[in-house]
Image (cartoon, rainbow, N blue to C red):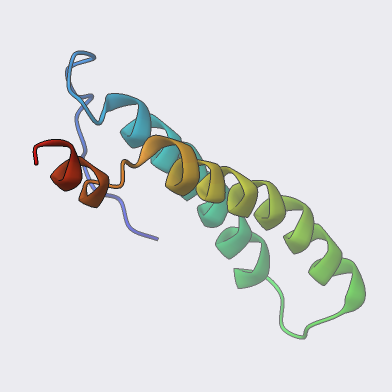
Length: 80
């Protein structure tokens, strides 16, 4: 696993909430990696546990993309 030493950013930073959300998602993905790293062969039970870990991460990532990231191309037409 990747053990980057990432400091806590300034809460006033524009991307602070996105940063927090992405770290939460990353922690879930890391938990999934940890789960399967101890498994020698794939099986239904492990797949189900992995889905339970990763599906919320996917849903949260989709929310970040849809709600927290601005479509800056929309701003171009506003100035004209």
